[in-house]
Image 1 (cartoon, helix red, strand yellow):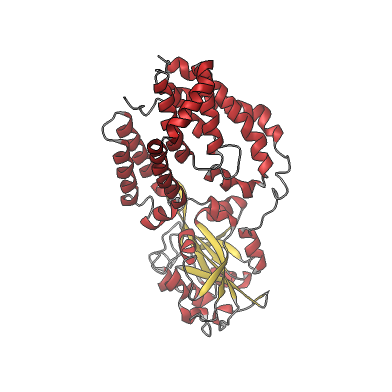
Image 2: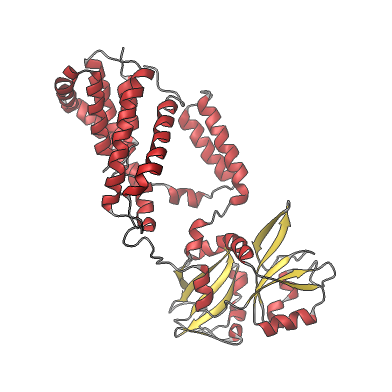
Length: 441
């Protein structure tokens, strides 16, 4: 039996995709609550703006341009020591790269160049003193567009000192916070109130919460820190950040190469996918730790359990019993009726267990039914594959459904109202088109 090729699913899949889009645009959007559900407008997590306001630094963020005659040109952040001299904190730096502004976190070894724009936190008085003392510095406006650019590369997080933190009793300066974590402390909350004045020279105490700023990658690493502090708040903007955007061309090229290997049967699909995964790690599009975290172990264990279950159904005779029942009840009505029965069976199973596991479980049933009726197994197996992908009607049917459940404020009934019509639409198109592409005989 010749297996399906990579594009065997494309004709029917494209047709279902177009029909689904038309349905959602014309009808589906009317089936969902307009207010996004009972919690659709709730924002449980704070935004960058919320954190800035809570720590009293909303009006203390500035943008300064470094001119070619500035004494900062050619020196590193550690050498200039703006924090020590002027009590201002450099958060990040904007630099032109290939005609586009690129914002990067400010690290000790960061070297200033002419034309750089630095983002810093400080009082109006201290910034004015800096501009008066250092020539070749020009103040710029801080518009919404700049804030959006900064939010993509620079972020904020709120952390709470633990009782056994090594930072307790130390000042920010003595703790070398930037050197240790690659982040800057922008503010301190003590007893729920923001500290004013030179908080960098204030000794930290248990229960203090710190507002730290810097690169999103460094902020992401904070979540693994358990000894010195606990991360209280990661702003919701972090969910929209792609930390390796500059590696996107490499990722696209790797995916294109993988598809080429699979399409032209140069390598087996499993080998092509494994090589693509290895290439992603070597190209630094993803780290090994991130790759392991992204694995859905629950699905793997479920599939591993379904494989021997399918074998057990075959060896115990249960599979033959199901096949006989399907053929006797639907076979007399014709192959279309049998295909519809397999589609409904697979689609119902896929609402509660993994669609991959469902396909593994039902595919042998479809193959046995086709064989017993002396029909081609291809249309029935294609129907099973398409039906397994109609995981629309329950929140647990697919990780994607679960992912949008909370942010969208959806209820269980919302998935049923939207999913069931989509399943019926997909089944109708499958029964209509699949026999034309894959004849029964």
